[in-house]
Length: 443
Image 1 (cartoon, one colour):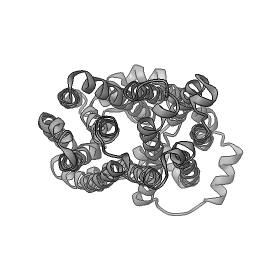
Image 2: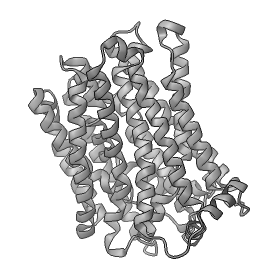
Image 3: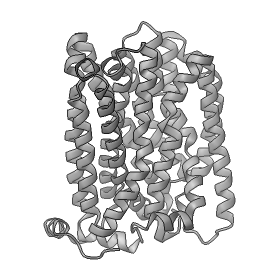
Image 4: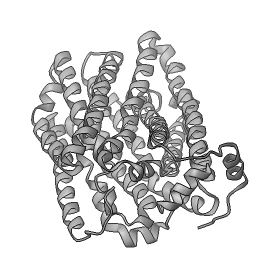
């Protein structure tokens, strides 16, 4: 690994030089800012995939088929994300974290703004589809480079009795990003005519996403390039190991870590992207009202994520995740009936779903972190995150909508059940793995 800092890194270290201990609370702020910006990008695109792109990019198809095609393009970012990790880990080793983050967030912002200027099919034909797919791939590659190690640093520096509490902090970015994206789209959908919304209104959330990425870039650079943080990264062995070496040494932990949160990710899409598509396509309700319901549900999700930290510190993260997987399996039995039960049923579905999501998602990122050897924790955590999103989230909206339209909403419940089963199996395997490695440090 290169030990020579770039000019930008040296300048940033001088400007941000400080003295004294680093407070875990300060790390937490940087983590929440970074995660909120990433999830805001995620939800802006996800919402547009339901209410904008089928009409703008696939107007020659019926609404259902157009949405399925839109979800297929949605998945491209998750397929490209591991490639981004490979590329940007090499940048990290050669030029440092500041160069890596700057390039990655510049690419992410550029791809996001490119979508905001996207011409429709009516203007440039099939080129609109290819440009959208290219921008989505760009977003995925960029997201692979946004891994800054702050979440691992936070977990490693958390007080021993509060590991669950600090593990939940990065997850707050998901509901926060959803709330902002949902309210923003609800405002434009509810206050503009259909013609104005599809002409220019839908583009504004993507401009906002670019602005948030710029703020997040400076906030995170301020932290990762300072001398105290550099020393902390070095002391904790949070270095960008080679992908090949990481998989050779930690492949089992990466694989288990990718499947452990599948119940959370299945529930994640059952209360965010999929229900919006179902309501938009198969009911007479407008999207603005349901987006507000999602935002309200996300508030319950925030409370549940916070509660997950308190509960995990009492009973353990694996026990909480296992219990949540069982609860999600039970919920899958009546979730379809609630979603198909009108306004009241939808509201109950969203609130209960977000509570279960918050409790499980709040601890999903740290479930198997202790399995990684110190020298591979930085890269291993990044790969685990990439693969978890790919397996659990990338094709989830497409699969859930396709199954539901072919076999009814009950199949969406079965999809949720399969995610819960995968989590239980992965947690069991991880428990056995840990028994064979008693020397692994607990994070």
